[in-house]
Length: 99
Image (cartoon, rainbow, N blue to C red; front, side, top):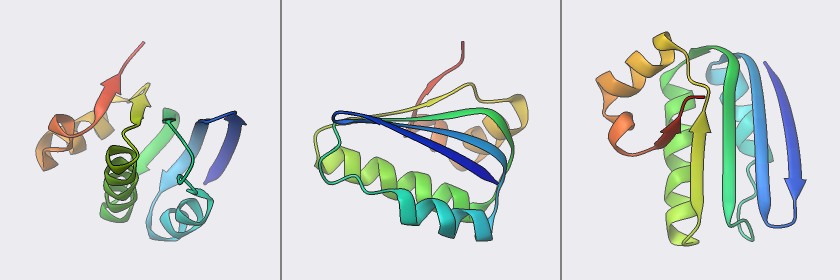
């Protein structure tokens, strides 16, 4: 998986490409430093697969943003990953924006 990370002040933007599986989730977790972040966006336009490890990382990030009183957005979700979100109930937890 390729992780493209951009920071603009207190906003963090991730564009993920490939598969967010167990190995990639560990790599992503190391880059998720959210202590002083008010908004984090994950762009899934190029993401093809999301495992339970990836879901765990998203849940952890969402909980951290909630405690920061910040905002987390997941955008450009394809149909396969949206089905995973709906099946697991994550569609009720995450802010998902498809453009």
